[in-house]
Image (spheres, protein in one colour):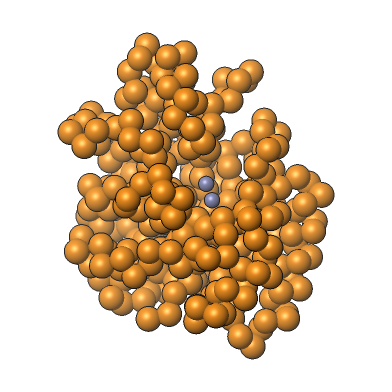
Length: 266
Ligand SMILES: [Zn+2]
Ligand SMILES: [Zn+2]
């Protein structure tokens, strides 16, 4: 089975390697395709994302690599679109919709960055109730998905990154499942994201198993992606993801041909 990764960061945003280094690594690993998805520009926090000038260079470089390596690997140009960004979607082969912030107009809380940001939000806005953060996060993600109608939804339960939500937190599970039920009306493709495993923050991919089961029961589909920030993690934990998907009951996952998804049966 040949893999594809559509969630890849480079030095154009917060990745460690250049786009060309990543292409060479993907070719070496025998991958079928690689899609770049650097972070869209967010005015509220420019520390991790592409600046407008980077975006011009990003287009030029990915177009150059598409041409240079055309005989060896398929290359796609996507973007990881945050809620606090706007892009012209015709400039990209695909769009990933992700939430990285809760923002009150003055201060941003980078909910996937450190646990302190999550704990501060829970203190400042939730009277200590972490499930309120979950509700606020999922409501914003639903709004984002509804507005931008992405090709797929990024790290759907990223707020579980730091272990704030215990396995027996039924209220959290209900909030997350309700959110999936709502957003699937606008986009039925979710990514299985291994980025937090390669960065040693989690031992299993997003989404958690109960959400995978929910997605399957609603007819949702899965694309496996690495959310990779380096050239050595472009297909990290993909074989294991296939096993998890099979175990949950999925019969296939999705791959991308540059215009649309197609099924890879497992
Ligand atoms: Zn992200
Ligand atoms: Zn990412």
